[in-house]
Image 1 (cartoon, rainbow, N blue to C red):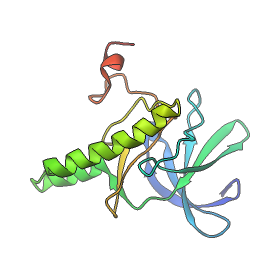
Image 2 (image 1 turned 180 degrees about the vertical axis):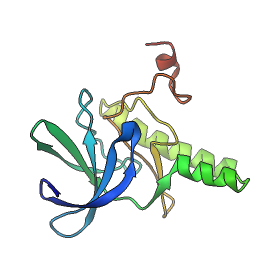
Image 3 (image 1 turned 120 degrees about the vertical axis):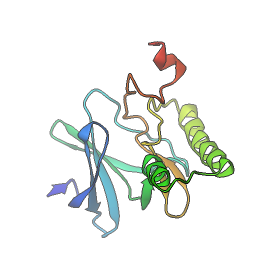
Image 4 (image 1 turned 180 degrees about the horizontal axis):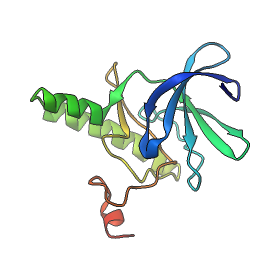
Length: 158
């Protein structure tokens, strides 16, 4: 199966709302990640920052839109936290502060560009094997109304 010029190779993960994250090859053979954009949300971020996943392009097929993104190797912060809990370990305060700072830098760049995230949580923070925190799903995620990670404005229905 192809999505635009990208040959889909398999499924990387099942994202929020049951949406698949697909592994595909670019025409040059480089790996990319593809995620279908749900109806009713933006087309995805155009913001660029080292702590934001890079969106390479948006592909439209019929009425459906897909985000073609850089392929990242690592895991979500939620997965890392689950593994640490099972091992009765935790992230050091210093490392946690560093990760939060890096994600805030990425969010700041997005906000300067006029974009909102609406759903920052351990599920939307990705930690690469190289240790880089990257924010996922900028511009295409609707906040979960009952999320423990919602902002005060979201909690107050504003």
